[in-house]
Amino acid sequence: MHELSIALNVLDIAEQTMNEHPESELVAIHIRLGPMSGVVCEALESAFTIARQQTLYPEVELVIEETQLLIDCPQCRKHQMAISINDLRCRTCGTISGKIVGGRELEIAALEVRDEQLDDTLSRSTDADSKTE
Ligand SMILES: [Zn+2]
Image (cartoon, rainbow, N blue to C red):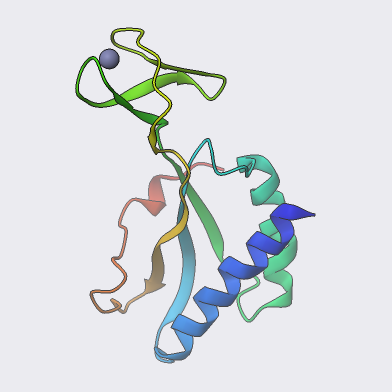
């Protein structure tokens, strides 16, 4: 299962980072996920729920920020949103572009910890409390 290995990998990276901050308690992992990443958001969430049981953080939350599919539009001469992953035309002018510049992301955006703030390599997000189940 593709998503399970990704979830384990994300948790592994988080664990390595947390090892350098033993005073901190990990509460959530924020990731950025693009529509072209090949990962299904819901599948990753359920895989994560299984994967976290095998870690030091069985309660840790996964917060997914879905990114936009962006193309480099030759007509508008700037980055624009595409219509869909199956229709790589500029949403503004309809020009087709083969150049995808955003939407392949699968990366850890931040590790959210309790009480402590990690150093500048990882920024703490403050909006996790607004997440609905
Ligand atoms: Zn355009």
